[in-house]
Length: 123
Image (tube, rainbow, N blue to C red; front, side):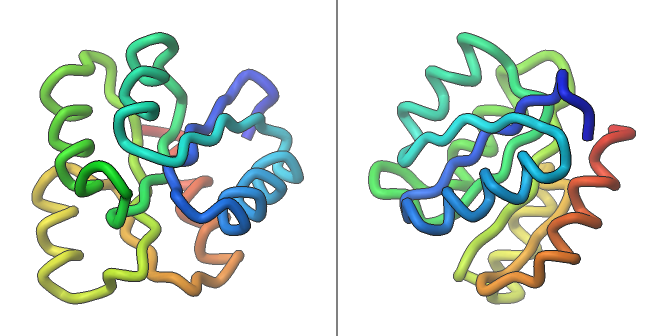
């Protein structure tokens, strides 16, 4: 991850978001945190991030609804990593069908997240 890469973290849990932000900074990137889908969408429209880490259980909307909007309204391809406690097979399939690049369950292994981020760099 380079210094010009900005990751948007869409996560309602402040502690998880802080941990993700720290991990991204250690990789040389920057991050912006939004705790709900509405604020995240406003940020995406304002400045499209190089990567989005998206929780499915947001307080104001389902993360899949935000993913649908990203895929239908944002022209440049933005990689999306789903990071959620909703680790059912149905949730995984739905996320992938809607255009998620990776699906990770909470609690996640940091190495798995690093690998997903690294894989998204070429997208």
